[in-house]
Amino acid sequence: MKQSLLIIVNLIYLTGYCQYPFEELPQPVYEEFNNWTETKQQENYTITIDNFFETESLTIQLTSYTDDVDQESSIRIFRGKTQIQKLSEDMFFSTLNIFEPIRITDFNADNLKDIKLLIPYMGNGIAALNVRVIYLIQNKNKGFSKISYDDMMDGNREERDFNKDGIFETITMKLDHHENNNYWTFNIFEFTELGLTNANEKNNYPIMTQYLYKKNFKVSNKISHSKMKTYALEKPKDYNWQK
Image 1 (cartoon, rainbow, N blue to C red):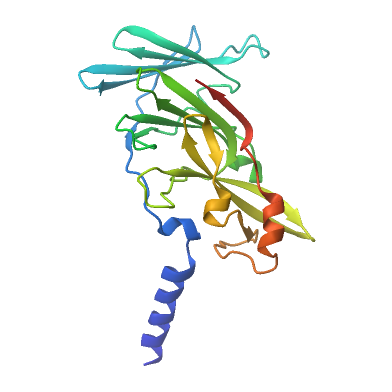
Image 2 (image 1 turned 90 degrees about the vertical axis):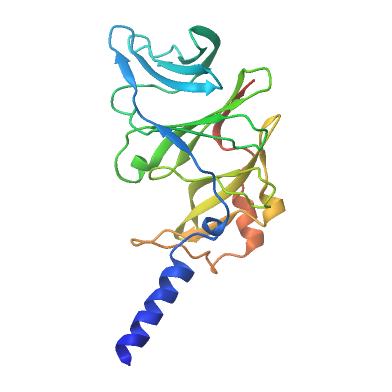
């Protein structure tokens, strides 16, 4: 009998507490590709997705300039064999941080495939969570809008559909200090024609969970929600939008 009760309690704990509140919401289904090729002479990293544009391929080429630290990196986009776009990006690309798969799905429910890249900064300790998130949102003219920002995550954090309208929101995480304790703060942003727009008020965010030396998914009761709002972000850290 005691063993049965213990199993039930463990199940309640696992299903009720071992996730953040947003993890119960609908999430996108990605296609994932990770067959990057490197051209060492030019510091290029290239990946091709067959039939991305119906019958035409998509190729993405990431380029960094290791001999000129002040020169921005670039993202070139090809449709078939033709380059259709070149976007700048203030992030270095190297063999050390090109290992996350490229993820493809429709984030904004316009029936066009979009792209997500995660590029880690390769820090140590908590700094190992620092990543550059890069979205390439496909426009109706077949070009892409680039959204990029700094975030903290271990692997990929899936987007969620908070209001069940088919359009996903992205969730950012940062570490804040409040009254001798540290907290993970989660903000919500929605995809719009003007890039990312803060969606906290629509969903009663931000939320904060206390940073502990163990997994902790519970929203803190040590901070009032009105106080949590003072840690909200208008835009993600080092946000950049190019259309």
